Image 1: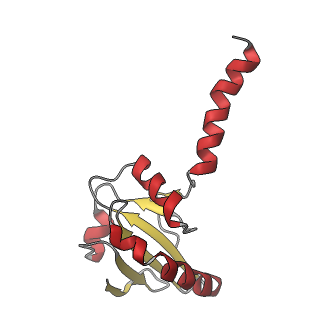
Image 2: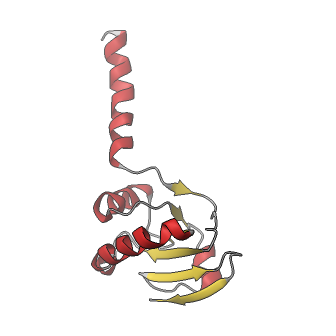
Length: 130
């Protein structure tokens, strides 16, 4: 195999994956100037799909007003592959947090998916619900 073929064989698959799976993974929250919305979701929950248009519309109206959005995946069964599949299907342009140890879910009392937690600009709980 030529050196060029080897380079293409190594680099091209990585580029294709990067184009298909959004790289929005975050390890910390960056609060919005006017607040933050945490959407606790599961890659396997069919209910989340029912709300995708509403969330997209809400984001389009409020992000420019200083509200930041994050998907939070807290279920123990979540992995990067499932989260990537979720993002390919849902069409949301927001970062996500893989809450592997469930700290965010426990901190804000998220017990089901989908569930929304809204924080004020200081990061304090403002409202939570389904």
